[in-house]
Length: 169
Length: 169
DNA sequence: CCTTACCTTGACGTTGAGGTAAGCATTCGC
DNA sequence: GCGAATGCTTACCTCAACGTCAAGGTAAGG
Image (cartoon, rainbow over all chains, first blue to last red; front, side, top):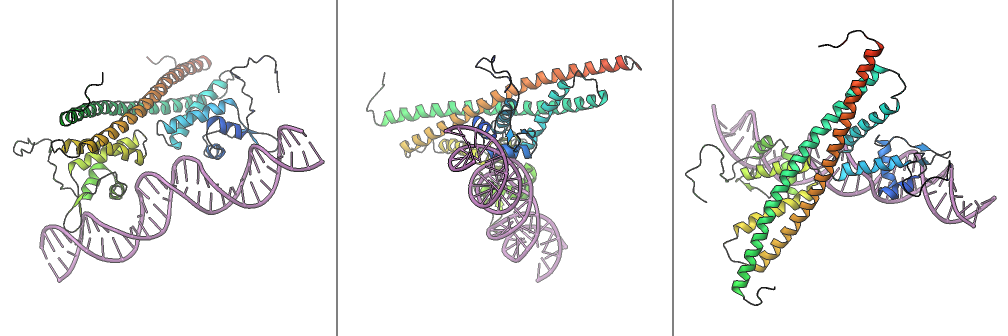
């Protein structure tokens, strides 16, 4: 490939696509099917291909898959919602890329406003979720306290009824 | 506990089942189908019935449906997970109910330990989710800031290129 | 008793998020 | 240059979480 000499063995920030689907699948712990499925649904942009048609992914793609997984598994977003989010991210990158080239200013503005709107909606949604989770958490704390005190009560009763071994330490 | 006289006109803590499925559906904004489905899946205990077989729900059932909905929609738990949670709650109520009757002590201990375990797992899961969401939130904040500053940049450029109307106010 | 609105069970359809298998093409290691 | 490994597409399968009829039973007013 390109300059092979000076990459220190850690953190290959190189973004040329060089990973085949199998390796991506392994590293992200999703199946190849899932990767193709995400591509089909627009969650991953069509990767570059090698001559024969094999997909070639970049490190950035791996990051994306991992973000998708987190959004899905931990946070319970649907793929449709995740797609929206990922697209907002895309806009960000796109705008950054085209930042120097002075083309289609008003169009860029429109895109940017859209992205802002989407991002604000996401922000609001996440706020709600955090609030709900926090409330749940405190209820769980409370419940755990109750349970633990009951357990002690039960232990006491048992000691009352059958005073066999007492106070271990 | 069982005093019936002094309920002020607010907060009907009455727990006799008196609601038909249609009303429950309306008040909780889920379909009748969903209520039957939840019952089928063990998320709602089989409600009492009137002579002809019509289901009769209580206010407590409405609470439950609302909790299920929140767990599902806001937090992205599966019905299977929610069932576990709801069952832990059940154990709580059961144990409380049987608190006086001194029956099957060791069995109660076992149940209690199980409930504690489940609750602790839930607690951990929710911790993770909160952490992930909080992180996302800060990234969104960051992104929004970037977007907004870009917007201002764009506005400036526009003023640069075509200085038509300037500073409204 | 009749009508009408509400309820029952049962069975099949749908959508989201993938899994699995078949049959063929490509690439890699030697 | 060849075989094994890896990949490609197409098509059907699954599972969850319901939706949607269909074919009737029930409650309550007139």
